[in-house]
Amino acid sequence: MRRETTAAWRRFGLTAALALFAAAAQAEPMHGIAMYGDPALPPDFVSLPQVNPDAPKGGTYRWGEAGSYDSFNPFVTKGRAAIGISTLTVETLMGRNYDEPFSLYGLLAESIDTDDARTYVEFTLRPEARFSDGSPVTVEDVMWSMEVLGTQGNPRYAAAWKKIATMEKTGERSVKFTFNVEDRELPLILGLRPILKKAQWEGKDFAEATMEVPIGSGPYVLDSSELGVQVTYKRNPDWWGKDLPFNHGQWNFDEIRYDYYANPQAIFEAFKAGQVDAYREANVAKWQSSYDFPAVAAGDVIKAEIPHGRPSGIEGFVMNTRKPLFADWRVREALILAFNFEFINQTLNAGVLPRIPSYFGNSFLAMDPGKPAEGRELELLQPFAAELPPGAIEGYALPVSEGDQTNRKNIRAAAKLLEEAGWTVGDDGVLKNAKGEPFAFEILLVTGQDEMASAAEVYIEALKALGIQARLTKVDDAQYKDRTTNYDFEMTHYIRSLSLSPGNEQLLYWGAAGVTEPGTRNWMGVNSPAVEAMIAAMLKAPNAEDFTAATKALDRVLTSGRYVIPIWYSDLSRLAYSSNLKYPEKIPLYGDWSGFLPDTWWYEAK
Image (cartoon, rainbow, N blue to C red; front, top):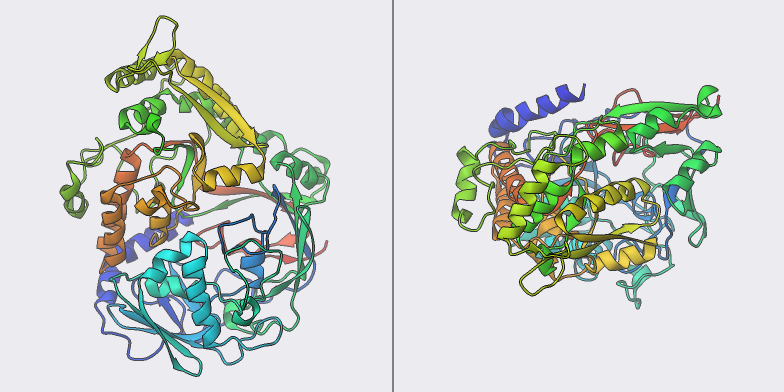
């Protein structure tokens, strides 16, 4: 089912979109917008295709979250915000339909207007839009939100703000943004910016972590909280948007509660005890062996495997190239060679899960592993040929081991690369550089990451064959956030989920500004003109064909950069849940991801 959906989008992206994109500029404001072509749903749609518009309202949904929180401001770098604030209590101008690669429909805004080149975007607010305190959502709130997020918020908001040349109120309910660069995604990016109430923040430092709850316009309001223990939201009976077609069948629970636990194992035990309503299982072996508890046998807990059509993304052990130890690509390749994926995957996952082949693996946006770049991909990469790492143009694929624990062939290849990079093993069996400094580093994990810790321990033992001294350090959630925010680590677990519509967020993930600017998601410290150029080509692409080529080229540069030791991925979600919870028959393109649980689920007692 998902393969068919992905194939349909591929056909759309490479053929039909070319004709659609060539159409004349919009003559009037529209109810929605797509990255290429027109949105799939007509102006008079009654609900999103992946919801049950007749879903009953009521009941409670309880979710377990690892760690803690110390802030109710999820829009800034400081602090760890309570889960649910941005998704449940705050809204955006447009809402995303997760059954399309990238299409938005009016939410706070009743319409969107832009030209064919997308040099500007104008939003018109709905007259009935209200914050939870009953006050209207105004153009002033929109303009203030855009500016404060872009200048004082998390770095993920800054890039788009810098691309706005002018921001002006064009009517009582209309606001227009004119851009200073060519970036076709900007109208959609601004449509997804959270809109906050300006008056609430006057005289306050927005950039600080705070326990003051933002006043939003969303379907829920904060009901109760206990710092670091739980946070509970109740459905707002006076929510202004409950009758919008976009919201039909969504936000059905009367109450949504997030309980905090020390680690994932504690969450799983709480789920088994009936204190948590759903649990995502990332470990295939556990999925096969650990779900024989009484609630499953009695039918009170249901196991579901939910497919999706999104890219694999990247997950594994990331190397911080800000550290001189990891600056040489040959060293990074050696460390990838030493990671015996086949053996570790067999040990932890019964060998069931495939390895992540590249950042956009499992999708039509992925490079062809091991094959040379051709056509438009090659044209985009050619100007950077001299500085690209080996394999970017001629082809790169991850090494494969023979599957046994020794991994001799890859260890020999790794030793040779390390020697070329200036590292040799002394008489004491320790790998050292010309200065006599040992090759030693720390693998940083959060307490409770048991599966990743198991993989790290096997890896550490394998590295001893090369004379490398690696150690595993586990810290609490707060320490981990502080250290990763400031890039104070050498190697750590890394995961970045990617969509079928990559865009400006790629600069946050791998843009050069993140090398020194704290709080970005560029943990590996990528500093590559080629990466920046490929992202720029994606944002300027006039059609889906050029967009796909630019994304594939970016995939090549990132994968051959050897920044991450990739692990496994799954093309489906393994989700166990209470039999009192229900979800629609139609699974959206993105599967069990944003916009699915709890958004479209409902409570239905036995």
